[in-house]
Image 1 (cartoon, rainbow, N blue to C red):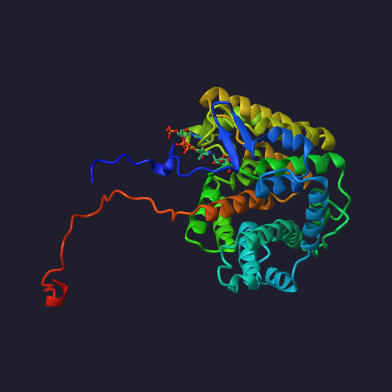
Image 2 (cartoon, rainbow, N blue to C red):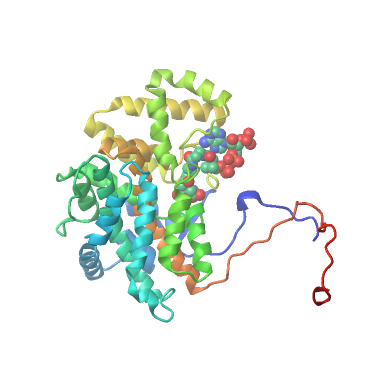
Amino acid sequence: MADTEIKKGLAGVVADETAVSKVNPDTNSLLYRGYPVQELAATQSFEAVAYLLWHGELPTEDQLAEFERLERSLRPLDDRTLALLDTMPTQAHPMDIVRTVVSQLGTFDDTLHRAGGWTDPELDTGRSVYLFAQLPTVVAAVQRRRRGLDPISPRDDLDYARNFLWMTFGEEPDPVVVDAFNRSMILYAEHSFNASTFTARVIASTTADLYSAVTGAIGALKGPLHGGANEAVMYLFDEIGDASRVKGWLDAALAEKRKIMGFGHRVYKRGDSRVPTMKGALDTLVAHYDRQDIADLYDALESEFVERKGIYPNLDYPSGPAYHLIGFDTEIFTPLFIAARVTGWTAHIMEQQASNALIRPLSAYSGADERHIPGYVPDTAEV
Ligand code: SDX
């Protein structure tokens, strides 16, 4: 094979086309089915954006009402899921617990046994809504279990964001917090062929089922170079302490060649289109909880690192402190990302199956030259 240029990490490779979202680093923009994400975050519920990602259009009033009724009916956990949660170590990483639960949810789905049931688009639309509705109840139960608290049952009189916060904290959430949380879920929902979405598409391309593809995507999202970064940002903040220690901390971190979590992006090189909107949500939470210290640390690290390395924050940088202020455990930040991104993952899984080709790239061999076992004599049948 002629010398083939290897694109490590598939950087810059266009692997397929998609109609779900458009990430444009030149204009620093992100469109979900043609709508700028900033407009969706400012005007829509996360339920409406989920509907848009799956169906390609924003729902009418009647369609949204019907979707909300269905989603709310699917929130309660099966007793077998609650029993499974109790078998897992309380301090196991929530990403591992949620990944395991999603895998179990697939075993409850007897429509998988129907001929063609693994890739039926109508069944997959229903499965997508099911996971969308179940994940907040799972994530809230995992956080409460870590704190030795019983799970709180979902309420069908609350919208997605309010119910998520109710199940986690057991009190009616403040509208400021609800709005910031709703915006974060919309911003996290979808981002074209990121590592976890591409993982889901690879699994879907083999015509495996949606639960297998989502389970694989959760595994990919866990890594700190991807979804795990929002959790890692908070560890950085804890390590630095306050704004006055940023310069010294960064001297040491860069001397050790550390990756500064929450900064940089494979596609955006002059800043992540979602950051201004999420930073605005963080600012409202800083004011609401009176935590200017967090804002000062955030600003000090951003200005110092951008000045020294010219590498800009990504969505995980404002999201981490925002989730911390709302009261989520740090290890719960990436499961929140799962609950949001399950909409993008499932939209891509259905798109892959609608126009599928098995995803199987080539590799350039760099191993030992051909060699043989001493004394081996092939029998005539093999020759
Ligand atoms: C997400 O793809 C998506 O869309 C993902 C996502 C989504 O919505 O799905 O946007 C969500 O995953 C955001 C990214 C979260 N990850 C982090 O915050 C982890 C820290 N970031 C880096 O690991 C890095 O920026 C990546 C992995 C995100 C992107 O890196 P690239 O494009 O592979 O580039 P690179 O790692 O080769 O970096 C190029 C140079 C290197 O310097 P040299 O080795 O060439 O001297 O820039 C440096 C890197 O060391 N660099 C960093 C850095 N990011 C890049 N140096 C320190 N800290 C960083 N954060």
